[in-house]
Image: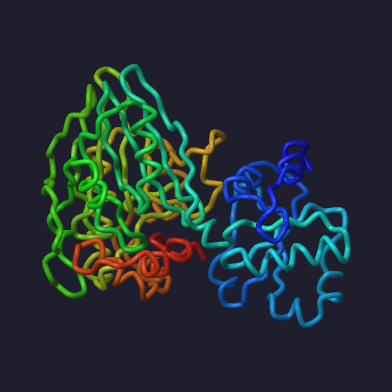
Length: 403
């Protein structure tokens, strides 16, 4: 193991039971580089199968259900290799604390607990400087366990937040650090996989919240939303400091999906694609229950609208990622459009009929909670914290299946 990772584990703090534990931020830092770390997940079989810890450099992982571990502690403990730094994981950090303690006491294995378990891991955010120009700075705010990406654009003391995730703290901290005034909040679409932080941020800050009107209608209930927002339309241009944000309507993933083309005078051009084009794959068309009708819209949006309106050198900042390896060396999820046309294998189906056949044959199962999340994001339902957390469990599945 690299010295940095070993030192981090050795400096783990003690929890209330005297067991060393590390935070989700600590674990994420460890997963960014190769190491001799060993992960032991003690959740039940179903939870482990549906959602696992992932990272750029994922170490060896073993799954032993907690119930099986405590039934035969000696035998289970022998399955964990010696000479490895072990991080034990459970749902909320309780069962894993006991397992870590047993490994330390019975076999002197330097095991530590993941504080807060998968619940804390799912709520961990990472903020990185994604791009910088003469008159702007762009930050990528990622909810890494869920594969969700959002962005904060700062120029001349003004800020815009694109696709804010549920928790406001990362954005509020960034606004304070940059000293920028929040000029606008923009959702590329009404999300299905996570609860948007846009409406709440608008209330907290007084900044306007922008959404395309087609997405202010719940696609399953066909009910108009009950939320305060300002309508966006194709071709509309916003000014953030010295930058312009042009709205490009690209329906398909949702009827109101838009992209934002950002231009710096005489400088950078980049776009926020939301759930349109990703680094790998693109946004599936069935999360509104209209796959047959919306798959052709995805084709037109990608191969007609975007190919005509976006320069090949445009840098794409997507709204999701599927694998941590999609990030560049700096850990930022972004790619030049010219390269995506060549390397994103799902974009190689440029013939309309073959594209639609490919889409319809690669639709993963839609999580049932996505319908309720859509209700939340259109203001038709207000969840408490427990329900919100339950709705957002697991990784997003907004892209086509990669099988």
